[in-house]
Length: 387
Image 1 (tube, rainbow, N blue to C red):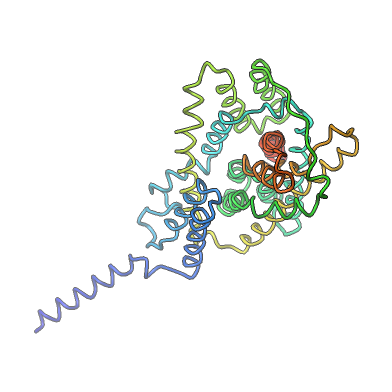
Image 2 (spheres, rainbow, N blue to C red):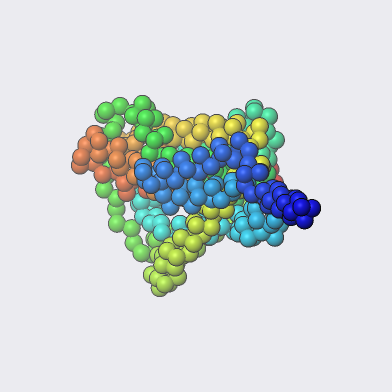
């Protein structure tokens, strides 16, 4: 009888010990909320096709990061020695963002910008969202460094947001990155109402002049000059701008096709998987939910809308000084944010709603790629002042 009781007690003790290592013993309401958010990301990616290449890795990463576990097992993204922690190294040290920019450079055709340099100004105007968010974050009580990291959300550029946050506010990296990528994915929802509100029917049907043919020599020269001009002024943006222009030279030189194809294909796909999965996993409820998280998400939304509005209104402003026949369709002003090529696609879709023959995509790519350069320059400026 005593042996039976001893075996029973032994069994109960071991079951209790086993139970404390299960997720059921360690979950909190925060974990449940984050798992629901992860499922929402996956739903939006599959059912609505909102940036599936980003939202599915991030959404599934959120699920991975919010399976509760007993501390000390070296499995969490914040536990030194865990696999996820090693993979997250590329996020917190800015490796993945630089590689993403290398791939973007190899994918990008700067012809629209080269043929019509005025479009660069639209990309610059849209960066107002960054500095508006910076001021708002200071008002909310964030430190200058934290405010700088939060402000870059207004660029609509996920990799740049990660790069800057990893240096200025590592403790806020998760929420800043998730906010930036969320607003990038929601471009088709956020921007169209603002575009319709701020433009007239007459402005929406403006037909822009066809772009001139850009020579191969110009395309090769652009990344070289672009690198020297931007990084001599803002060396802080070198890790991003250097990779962006290098990737573009690989593409435009035409003699390194294999390298260009690798960077814009397999490499950027692998990095996208790693950056999305580890970012999602970094939303571990025990560290992700802070009093600052909601403030950052709200500031980010406002910043993204301000950037969109600034781009559109700037086009309307410069149209006052342009002759008839040379005016710019304000619907491409939204593309000044750095969400490539989604915001340019939105310009095209809205333009076709009002004139089935008015194709704005290639025109919109000018301010769109200018926004990529502008956001990296803005990050360099903020880094120079706040690091």
